[in-house]
Length: 165
Image (cartoon, rainbow, N blue to C red; front, side):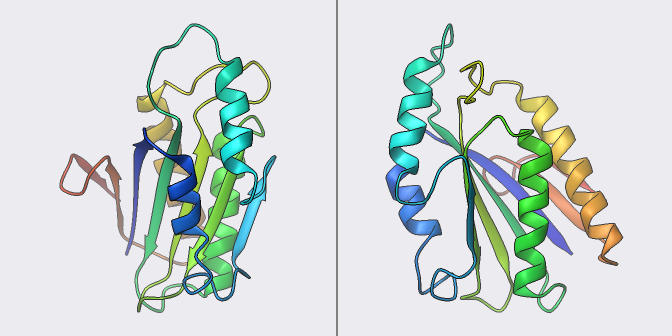
């Protein structure tokens, strides 16, 4: 079984990046990747993209997507690759992101933090329903091609509306 959930980052991108890139959780920072940013510059890159965003006063600075896999369902490296594939397909090369795979529990899980404003048109990401539908579909397909079955997609805090597959 796998679970995916997402929530907005409204206060500090730096704290989120620091948490997800913790060396004791990421096998000495070996399981960290990024696109159009780096863990060290993400807070500044996100701030720049947000400063260029237009016409949207939404307070979200970034989004934090978490993918949890059942124990022994996938290897650390495979989970990391699934996360990269999801982020690349979902964000279509428009949004900066940092992904870190945590290995400090009996289950492997990914954290993906992406900027709320894109790097091309500087539009804020605000089509939440489309995001959930697309992410759910991509994650399900990625899992099924690897022989994983069953899972949930959670929108927001734990306990909120779920879709099962």
